[in-house]
Length: 210
Length: 192
Image 1: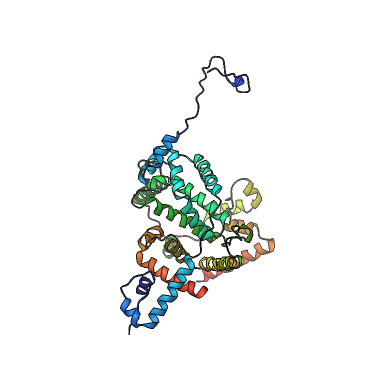
Image 2 (image 1 turned 135 degrees about the horizontal axis):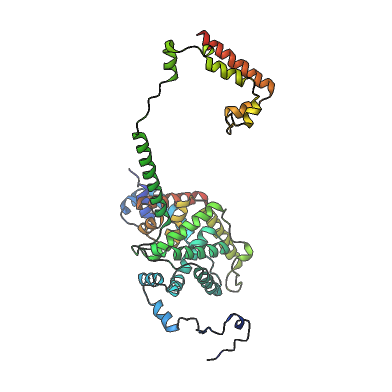
């Protein structure tokens, strides 16, 4: 196909040059579907082999979980969204360190918890502003009970945000993500006994705070 | 009656039935388990607001763009690692310094007679006042101004924080007091 290079590009091309124009390789839907069927070690291997699209699949599979962990720590959408993005970028950078000895989700949990704990150390946790809360459908839900539920939820979030870091992480992973004590120990890099002790004390502290 | 440990209480809170008989019999432990179970239920009821469905696509796009700006991660293996390179460089530096210090200390050292020892053996030494050479030098240098000598490079350049610099920064009165103190100390040492 002949191209008319009379525009600004033409001035940079010398007559003696042979110019070849190629369209950027796009992944077809079939190739993408094939990637989506890969298991996690194969996806990681594909990423390391240079297929960035494989990482898109990783993001798609885990974005909700990572976002929810970040939201539980930060208490608002904006920070949760930013931190979840940061988690995936860090995961991509450190992909060569993923050994496959634990599940990719465990590894992502670990990165997410570290990123969130670093952030909450530097920043006082915020709660969701009232105008950012989800719109209530007044026809379907009793507004009064929904308001009370919202206030109670805010109290619980505030109480959790006052827990020591490890206790907070343990509560989030155990109560909301239903990880086993062993999985939490892997995520936090501590012993199962320490996780159990943290969880027990976290519940006892929440009892006092609520 | 011995009450349940924290581990056992937690196991009961999470649904374990190992201590069911104890909990039936012990009201205190049963109340504690119920309290903690209730706290867990209250906490578990708090959900995360679901973002807009458009958010997820937008989020994936943001991550894709950010990842596209990153270099491709390299498989584990022979990767250049700045941490290792720093450690190796540090170790080599320590080895080189160690070898240099060892070689230097192995060289024969000329014995230095301590000044105190010389003073103690002072039988063969003549007083400086009686030394004709020192007397000549004294006569010649007494005519030279300190500033002239400095310009001629005959004096040591005061280093930062040195005694010379400190003296140079003193007023004439302060310098005179220092000289008096030094003379006093010299007289004391002579009288000993």
